[in-house]
Image (tube, rainbow, N blue to C red):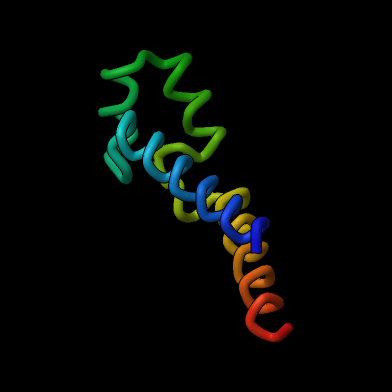
Amino acid sequence: MRFAISLLVILADRQHSSGRCLKQDDPYPNYVNQFGPFWADIFRSLGLYTVYGTWWFIIILLFLVVSVSLCVWA
């Protein structure tokens, strides 16, 4: 159960910090104008413009589902 709570905290932090700093799903030129071409490319490679579709966010969600399922089952 502690693992599930840890995952919930991580998900909330990642979602909140990226949503607070970067508006999601804006056109790419808006990000270039706001952050410059170097940082816009870095943020794009990390998937910070579409957090909910990134591989690392989905893996954390899958771990959360497995952890909660095991807690309910046990």
